[in-house]
Length: 273
Image (cartoon, rainbow, N blue to C red; front, side, top):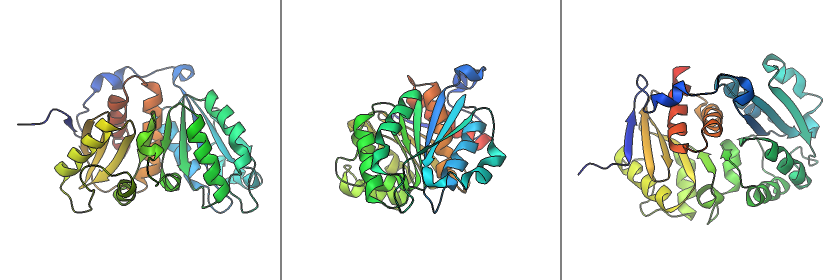
């Protein structure tokens, strides 16, 4: 018997065409996104996320960076400057990552936003780990996590799986690592068939509130609330951070329809390719 939870989208035909026509036309009503990331040795992820968020038609965007980047970041973002961009700076450690003392500022900025994207390039730092753990425990709103932001949450009872309003944009290798400590009924393997991964993600997101976007067997896969959609595509470079930005924008603009919004974000992302 055919399952009812797996929907298939193509690059030419969206599953939820009505969402494409019901998006806010006025920037004032197109939502507010906070992008967080960067460290002294790498801050391309927030810039890539911002560029993708603009393409996805965000209303207003802020970027939060460690304050030791303040003198050098202007040139990096100069080609992206626009009326929708604001850059704020938060306390950093001596090694150039976010300090744990950033938590109050991060929570305040997150309350301003309709959605938060932990974009990556955080580096490996114990204070940043404390910061991100505290943020995920205290903030109840929409959070999308990508790139090395995921690396702080591999433990059991991970907020990537058990926290409401959480989206992980994650490649299959990292999804395996997450599954190792937060065991779905079926192990996640690199060589598993697409249908088997779809069934596993259906079970996993039926039992847990965390949402997942991943890629396997030339398909993007969305899993949210037990529903799964797949969209076929050729290999895409830098897909994780760019698609995370698209997904964040679509989700904050359609907060009551997360599965439909995330599925539509994949269609919109691929349309630009």
